[in-house]
Image (cartoon, rainbow, N blue to C red; front, side):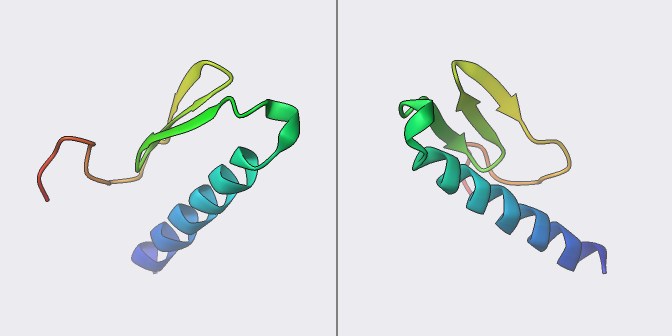
Length: 59
């Protein structure tokens, strides 16, 4: 149950990140750093509770 909920949350976050990236009102000020970190309007946002590899971490 918790594992499937984690997948739903991850999919939702990715969907919202890509949706925001295509939004013209943000002037392309969103960047996806790695699986749990984005930069939105020059502010770094880290999502808690998501276990994803870091950018330079070997899987």
